[in-house]
Image (cartoon, rainbow, N blue to C red):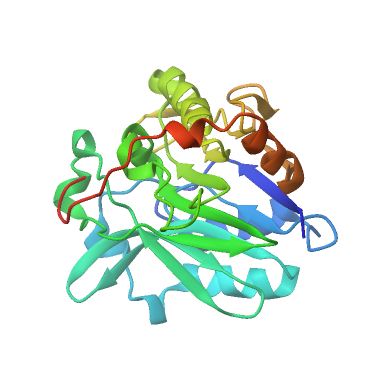
Length: 270
C-alpha cells in the first residue's frame, strides 16, 4: 500500500486516573475505526498525565489496564493504537510507548531521553533501543517527547545497502505551552533533515501541577510543511494521509541523503 491514514488525538487528560481517561478517550473516538484510519495516535502517558509517581501508577505489561485497553481498542476498531504508559519491569519503571495491532501483537519503545527538569530521570529508567515499526508499507521510528530535542538519536540510520531507515517519525508528548515554539520547530526540523514525514501528538489542558499544555499537534510532510495544524489549546481529532509515492518521488528528486554524514551510536551515549 502507498498510503497511511493517521489520526491525531489532541485532548485533555485526567490526572492519574486511567479509568477516567480510558472512558473519556472512548467517548472522543466514537465510532472511529478502520473505515476511517489505519493508526490512532494518543499523547504521552495518555492514562495518567505526565506523572512522576511511577511507583504507584506503573504496572507490569501483563497486568497493565492501559495496555489491555489499547489492545481491546485496536481489536474493536481494527486499526493500530499507540500511546505511552508507565510500566514496571524487573524492578525498574519505564515511560513506555505501546504499539498495539488489531491482531493483538504488542511492540514497545522505552523513552530514551528522560526530562531531568521534572525529575523523570530519577523516577524512570532510560530506554536503550531505537524501535522502527511497519504499517501499510511505511516504516515508522517511535519516540517520546524530550527525545525530539536530540537529533542524533532520531537521525536516519539505514542498514547497509539501503538509503533510508524510516519513512515517518512518530513523537508523542506532554510538552508544556511555554515551550511550544521549540516543539513546533523541532518537529519540522526533524522532517526536513530526515526527508521523512513527522507525526507529533501533544495534549492540551492543565495538569495537577498547574502546567498548561497548548497541544500544537502537527502532521508534517517531508519538506517540513504542516499537513495538520489546528489552533493551539483546542482539543481535536483529525486524520491525515501519508503518501509513499510522493515521498519516494521527492527523495529521488532531492537526494540530500547522498551527502549525509555516516555515524554510529555507541552504547550508553544519548
